[in-house]
Image (tube, rainbow, N blue to C red; front, side, top):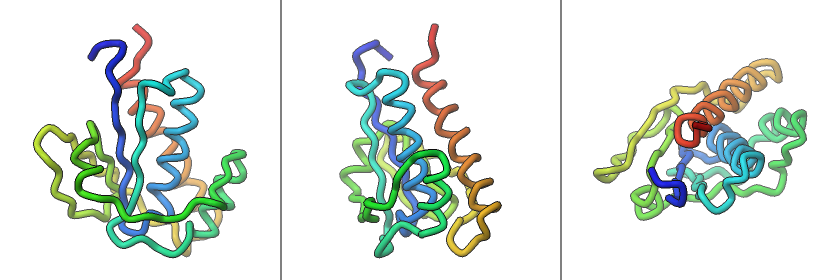
Length: 141
């Protein structure tokens, strides 16, 4: 990968109301903190979007000063996914990805309806996975 190549990460689940929203928010933070604004594109969506981001997810992310309250779950298109380099699904997707798109199933529990401690555990797992993804693609050599 050249230093000027743009990498597109996709984060997808069914409702785009929990895991994929947290993943995208952590990816946005990593992109900003690493100074990669012109090198990383982030796509998030769901196959059957919910009406809102789950309140327990908004609360758990607020603890880390990340505000998801204004985010709206959206449907992700096949074209958007086909333009990604890596698509992380959250253990709930049967997506068929185009050749050349690397799919990774993170197999994470759905935080919806879980107690606050379990939502934090899922959140922290996602944070680590997103950081590792950035390390993999943008490791300081």
